[in-house]
Image (cartoon, rainbow, N blue to C red; front, side, top):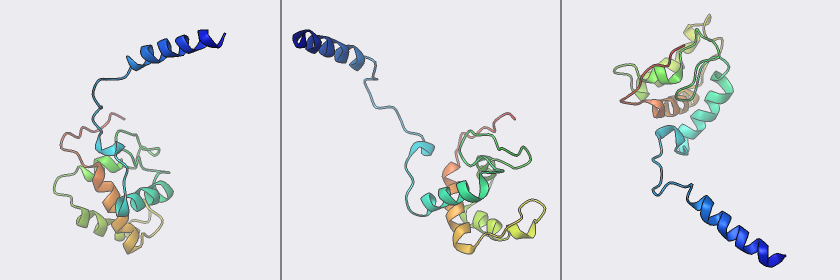
Amino acid sequence: MIQRIYPAIAIASLVLAGCYPASEPSTSASEVALTGKPAQGELLAEALCSGCHAIEAGALSPNPHAPQFEAIVNKRDLTEETLAAFLRDSHSYPEQMNFEVAVEDSEALAAYMITLKSDDYRPPVQ
């Protein structure tokens, strides 16, 4: 019986190997593992922002009045520095955001958010 199993495994392996693409698929920016400040910012975004905002590319915000991070960073002339400054002053808008973002957290959030910037960005339909 063991002799019958090995040929079956070999055949199954060959069949399954044919299912994989011949070349490696390209990796989008959102699929790349983040490190450093962007990785810290992603964790902060999940903890502080994801209740209202879509924090990943292509997602819709849980709160339809809260813009997607991807939509925010793809605004013309926005930079990581201007975004960090806005996030630091976000407590100026208590009706929209009822908490303050510390300087180091705003820099990490901006570093993460800027990774969502894309030349071919198209806003999702809500």
